[in-house]
Length: 157
Image (cartoon, rainbow, N blue to C red; front, side, top):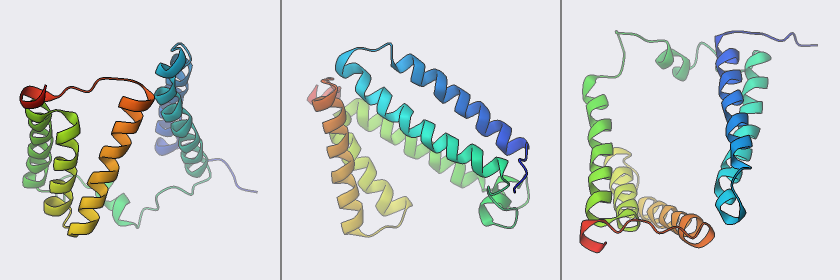
């Protein structure tokens, strides 16, 4: 039988899981269609959070010899160069600027496509399909299911 391990990762997973439980309880205060999206997200996060807690408490989390673990524990030598960090901020600022100018439904496919092609170095077809499906998901979830009006930006609003 496996012994339960209470370490930094399992404690942080438990804290996140507690936050998800609070958000799930809060989601039940919404009525009708307004509750759909928060409930879907919270139930998914609850399931993933439980899996994460179990993995960490059984000692089956990220092993110390993996690249991900090395990246998490690196401070200084070998850390991500400042250029990568700045580029992350530039990409986010560009996305926010696009939303401001052309609105959500035009900005999402432009950003996803550009990011996947330029930063992710993905192929044309994969980038285009991901942009289309991401935009369709946002449209269905927010406009159709939740009946929200997404901002059209300065040019289309």
